[in-house]
Image (tube, rainbow, N blue to C red; front, side, top):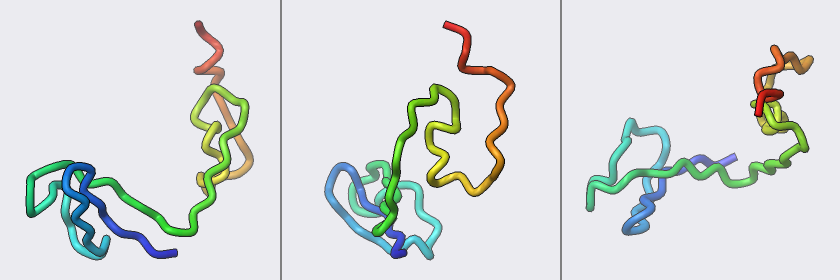
Amino acid sequence: MEVVYRCSRCGFIAEASTWLWRCPRCGGPLDVNIKGLKLTLSERRDMWKFSSVIPAKPLASLGEASRH
């Protein structure tokens, strides 16, 4: 997988091997783009909704999402 930073304002792209958190061109926030990542959301309402990219198994919860 290729990981790059992309500025949400001006589109600047930099390799994620550098430590950036703001765009050096315009000062905008950088998004992390992971090419080839397949994110599948489950029906759960807790952090395990993103279980396809969380390496921990088995799924555990304290019921934190059950409150409305």
